[in-house]
Length: 492
Image (tube, rainbow, N blue to C red; front, top):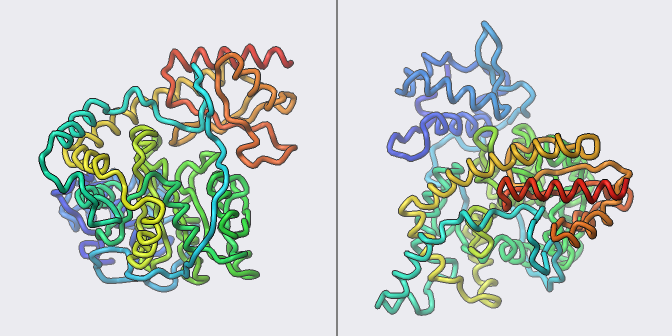
């Protein structure tokens, strides 16, 4: 039997539930190659004795592993690591490490050039919004923010209003963010691995500006987040599209491409892919990390929507298992709180953060120190965590209500899969519907819908739409579906 006691670290003082700690520990050992596909795990009683926890804790962990796709439960035989997972031939790292980010990256980066227009932005206000996946600003913790921000404004401390000595971000925010990433995402880093940005787009701008040489190849989904595509192209990169299916980015296609041409980076949205909302499967996450090590490309992991997963606990980010310096992880608080909270962050090897920090100073010497300090105080006092718990319940209820409306009111006209997480539903309309005309007619009735062209759909594929539900309450959702129904019926 493997030495699970030394392989799985449990911290009973952590705010992360014990069963999630065990789940994450097993996943990391699978990815490192120490626990092989097909291996039978110890029974829950034996594992509980080894780890010094209650048996129900282990049972909950095994159920979580099964729901995520890492484990297969065979009646009367036991629990086995999923045989379909790729086999890791070499153990990446068998020792306990303080962090899982190396000093240097496993990929080359240099300079870029300019940037052009972005899509997916509204230019006017609408009463009702099937937006691109915005949170409801009405439930944001504005009072808490105002309290902390006011206390900073009333402070007599000069350094809070001066130039910052750390251009990579507010020191206090980086400190609490390190704990937040460790407890929620299994990402263990140091301050030198963090760069605070004004949202994810600044991070992507800095990344591709410094990463790409002219005509470098970057793999993206055939359907992908349009602003990132534009950034890549404007900095001289070539988009290499691969298929997106129910398991996310097709990693087998990536392998075949890598055998034929040099790839600089792979841009991936592992949770609730934009625009299709699918999540990258466990097996594909493992294989993508293996390929990044073998072919020396960067994985740009856009985890903008990690906090809102309804079916089970979200699968650990790729970054949490990267010990080769292959992954750059990006996140943002704009979805967790409100778009006006322009605070995002990059997690990367130290040399990458140093380069991006130097580059950032010429477009924005430092971030909003007061805003960053305020967010640090909210995280420290547990206010962000309380807000996310409340928001998760609200958005899950809205998702269920919205999907129920689509099924009852537009049955036969639209088809969709209920998303496991995120703030939108990827919806397919009947091909008889002129979707562009529908979008324009809905806007006349003060119902906003994103133009399907913004999702890089081919002309003969413009019958999909990404319908955001989170920013409207249940009454507003009902009104919106009614408008949509009447507008459609005028076409058919």
